[in-house]
Amino acid sequence: MSGDGEDRRVGRRSRVAKAAGLTLAGVLVLGVATGGWLYWHLNGNIKSVDIDNALGDDRPAKAVTAPSLSPSPSPSPSASASASPLPSEALNILVLGSDSRSGKENQELGGGDSSGARSDTAMVVHIDAGRTAATVVSIPRDTLVTRPSCPLDDGGSTAAAYGAMFNSAYSVGGPVCAVKTVESITDVRMDHYIEIDFSGFAKLVNALGGVTVTTDEDIDDSSSHLTLKAGTHHLDGKQALALARTRHGIGGGSDLGRIGLQQKLVKALLEQISSTDLLTSPTKLYEVADAVTGSLTTDTGLDSLSELMRLGQSLKGLSADQVKTVTMPVVRAPSDANRVVADEPGASELWKSLR
Image 1: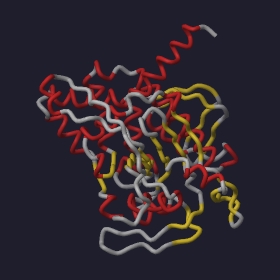
Image 2 (image 1 turned 90 degrees about the horizontal axis):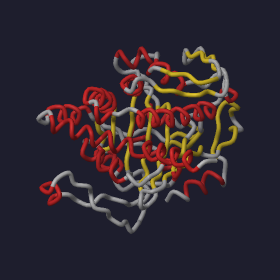
Image 3 (image 1 turned 90 degrees about the vertical axis):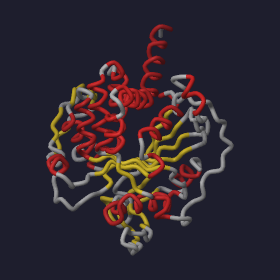
Image 4 (image 1 turned 180 degrees about the vertical axis):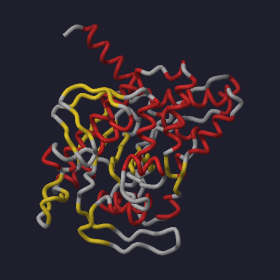
């Protein structure tokens, strides 16, 4: 294997790892260059949920680390005076893909009635102290769990449920219950929450000009309305979303097969972002930023472009080869062959490694 080939691969991984941070930086530059209107428009797109206030102290303790602070990059001497150090402590972020049916666009992409919503995709992203390594853990939506009682906006609470499907937490109590359920089954504190819905994901892929994915087997899923031969395909937003939702006909029809496709799609999307020169195209940059922020829900700690940018900048030392993707160990549920339960002690050992 040639040194030149290895250098090219290392360079590509580096571009992928830094793509999110550079895109966020470009959004801020775009906002400043247009008198701030675009910045405030995009900033106003972001929806947030005050999860910390809703859950209070009834949750796992925050991890105790001794962060080393690195100076925040400054675009000018005047900015340098007010710049604060970038954080580098360990983080756990719950990332959900929501199959919300609210709004015409989501209904067209997801089907179903307008009142239903579930967490179609769930990943716990653990970033190590120093932010140079990360682990992404997928939680199968079909996992049977004990769903705790969760607070509701009206001051009431949901009832605890035993042997409930994991993704039902979002259905009955929204982001707050999703976070509380994850913390309950993992005993790991979620420092942040990020959610993107159907239409936002499809718009992002379209704004990037599509995404190229290689599938290992034929796909013919009447539920996701996707038919693909094994091989390499360039997908538009609607097709990419269908791929992320596909489960029938692959991996025995279980959610584990879908998780494999989702992880493949995420990597392909990062490659597409890194290969698209967003910083030299203000129009495309705006389209991508508007697509993301328009369908993004976060906790109140990440509900502004400046906060998202600081997160992106703090990850500048994270290379793609230091990101590990795994799935929570599960086995078939004794009570239902179509469901799974955590495989112990493997699952507990995995979560313990992230505390």
